Image 1 (cartoon, rainbow, N blue to C red):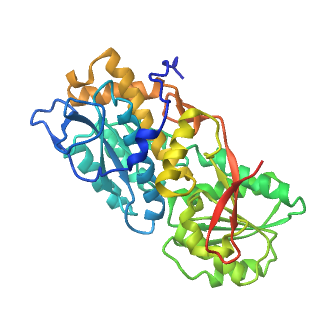
Image 2: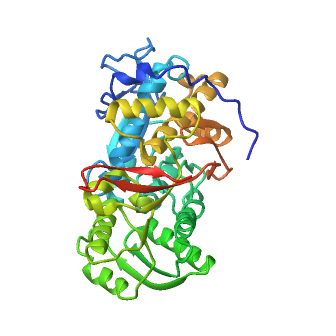
Image 3: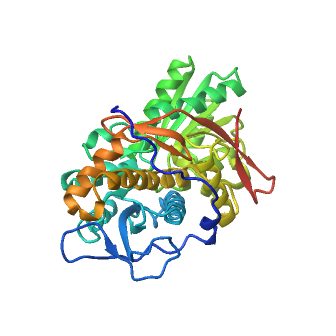
Length: 417
């Protein structure tokens, strides 16, 4: 990685200004009729510290509808908190940012349409998104061809940064994160021998993740007794679950999304499976809990974020999130906050060298992309940076276990030591 730039702002004093609410951000912004630049007129009164009446648009293309919305809604929450927080700190050296939201829904077509709208109509300087790796493989090439920076907030499948020079991610690859949960299961029960694996065959991330899980099972000297496939749209898993249970596995590993994964967990327990369950990153959301309720109890999930991570920026983010939503912030919200933070700090650094409101939009996008890759960022995820191809460099990882009330009315992710 190139020499890192100095961190550009003192991010942290208090998050009090953050706590007045998350505000809108869903309506399009109006651009200058010239292609200059990237700065948009903001006709809605705000409580930011900027006095220019203009804002720098950053696109947020995540799933706000469909079954994937269980993940995308958490990303929206994190992004809005970041917008509020960094604007309260002065935005881009006095100019606020304005998040422009487009719903990708849960498929590739939705992501493609969202990217095209943000790039060509909304004239954003960069995009945070999409939610799924499956969508990224289709939509990211659009950003690459347009030379618009893309930061994936939750795209962990193999090969995402390699899509192009303008593609980066703040979500650590599954190859680094996933094995931690299997090792945690072995620590809880060293007598584990037999493993059953389930994965969503229609989801690129789940297919990538299950390969890592299956290799980890072999590396740990465990026996892979069955691999069962399903679709993310499935609700009935009786056949697959019964087939696996008949082989008497000690551990079940699931790669899917929250709705299908939660239903699979529930049906495994209802059919009598009593062993440990490891969930993949698609189950890494509190929105899983209403799906399997009390039967979620005990599921292990590897994490790239912990609310307990030390550091002022995470403390500010955590307090803002808990004040707003009355629960601990999840990984997807932290990653979306971090992605917006990367844009803000890269824009701040770029503005000190070349005033961004003087750059034409294509040049701004190009210079911003370069600045993103050479920066170092102190985020809720901890200290991160990027390799020259846009892969995140992150130090800290965790494993959490779901703990549910007996009546299933409430639960939480408990981080293992």
